[in-house]
Image 1 (tube, rainbow, N blue to C red):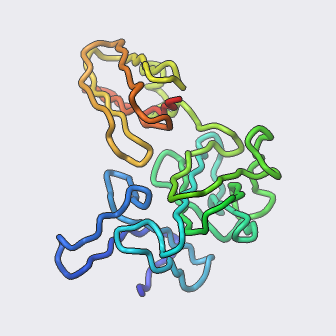
Image 2 (tube, helix red, strand yellow):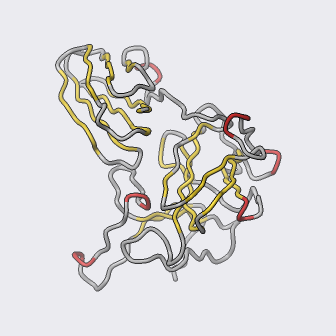
Length: 253
């Protein structure tokens, strides 16, 4: 048990002993994955309770015995974020919009980890902590007006745009550089054309979880790479030259 200030994110690991080499290997789904951190993390919100019990998580695993990890993500880049926080509410916690506050590591993407039973989960995001702050989930991806996930194993969900059925793409780290940097098509089934403001730049492709799956030093302002072999899903495309850098989200279909 630890006495910690509220409204803050904390990182931690378990150690089976008292030596650094006895530290657990945290599974990717549980990692902070920010600035290459491989620690577990938790956000402490004093509004939840005076005592926050995260459960007896199995060593080097994602969840307590008999439970499954689900990691919610929502992208708020198109909205003004409420001072009351971004929350997720679900059918298994009574649709309480104030209980589960989410945390953002960067780029307006908010996250929250829950340990639950497998099965059908309905959920939605809230820009605030009141029922009226709920997103409006489009008909094409909603069940009963909610998002739906059929959970069978530990899973990190996509970073859905608030009130949208899709991810927010492209996302550039600098709006002024958005004109100079360009990737297409997005989404695509593998071949990807990249345009750079400079002759030479470095290309790095990462999973949303932070794993580097492709990297190359490019020597042309306009190049095409074939990423067809990658598993379908959402990736981060990092582009960096001597003068500029940017990041795009790319959907491989």
